[in-house]
Length: 461
Image (tube, rainbow, N blue to C red):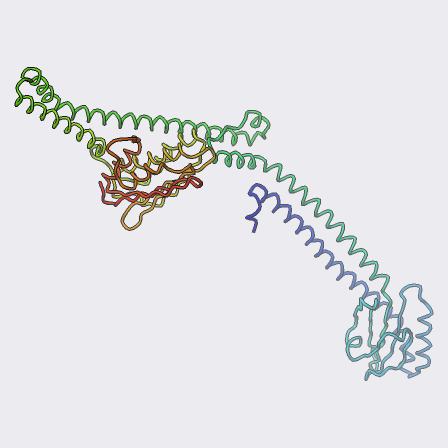
């Protein structure tokens, strides 16, 4: 119900609303009790009035002297200093009217109500009906319509005044509670604001002035937040250093492998060169030596190419969900450098039947390229899931679109033998080939690039 209200305002608003409702509700309950008490007092006043009237009218009723009864009613109407009568009635035991004095507009039908009820207030007419059966005796009934208009008007004015005052006091208390809780909630507001700012980039520690101005019990919380920010920055720095070390280690292993494999045929090639120098005049020897050099150079080219394309560390481990978390840490320094945000949507099992290094290398190159291509304030995303026995990864950016030639080479799964080439794209294409993976590219200069990579789960496992 309060989802549209900012979280930092929900508690103060809820508290103020509760105080307002409670204050108004308790006043309404009190007014109901007051109304019942007022009605009880009117009932008692009416019965006191009938006490004197019954005492004076009993002899005339028992004697059946209706003239005397009418005279007594007229005498009662002559005295209006206390309670004012609007009408007086006398009924026989069967409900027949014996005598009546007062306002002729007041109805006196004994059947529907007044005679069956000892007391009733007609607020619309401003009349209190009170009745009394004369006992002991044959059961005569006296009915009086007492004028309570002034009392009812005064009560209505009192109720309106009480309600208005109650609303003002309740609103004031609610505003006071809101202001007090909002003040007490300031540390939470500060923390929420800082955390929201941290979600858009590297979090910043709280200024010392803010910590010094805070309550003594809030300062440890601010201090803990600053320590958390320091730890996050240290972790980001370590992640960047780890990425650099991992890249350097991979390059070192690659260089060592190439050097080891290239050194073996160099002896034979050097012998062929020496033979040409010594016996180059002999056409047969020259042809044989040149052929050896040509084949040796071709072998070296294939060796270097295959090493670049198929290089794998020994005892490669399986890909896990942690690798995707590592990728986010490795890519974040580049994202912060270019001012872009990262969006991760990883829905894969804890472990996959794929080699971790190849997949990591493919995604790392694609994500770094996406960060470099996206403008400041843009977003780079990675979504991963398993579909139809394959790992499907989707890399998105908001850059100006991929070079059509690179997109063509990536989708074809091969790089050109010569011409313009990018080392990062070479690695991606080579690794995808070794993993039996396929890629598709959707590029639009206005909306960015989306690269979908599908790798069979058993590839390179």
